[in-house]
Length: 81
Image 1 (cartoon, rainbow, N blue to C red):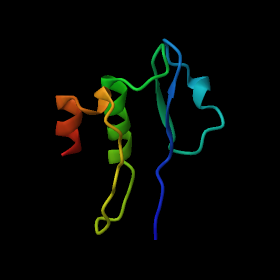
Image 2: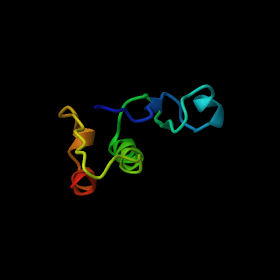
Image 3: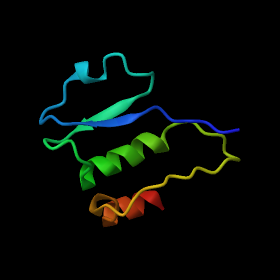
Image 4: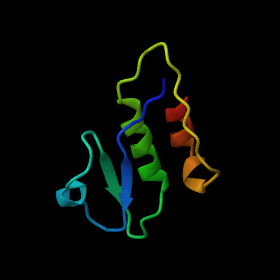
């Protein structure tokens, strides 16, 4: 039926620390930004995280995103294609 991908979290910090992922599920990943908000850079990191999750080749994936500015950059749209 359906499946899931490991979570990708954005932490409200300036610098990445490995301990941020302590206790996270296998395959989880994350990024940092001082505000904790999604940016153009970390939204592409999320897509890269999603791309390499193993999915059956006969299944489609649907990613639902809102219209936040970070999801409408040229790099984001090219990667999504």
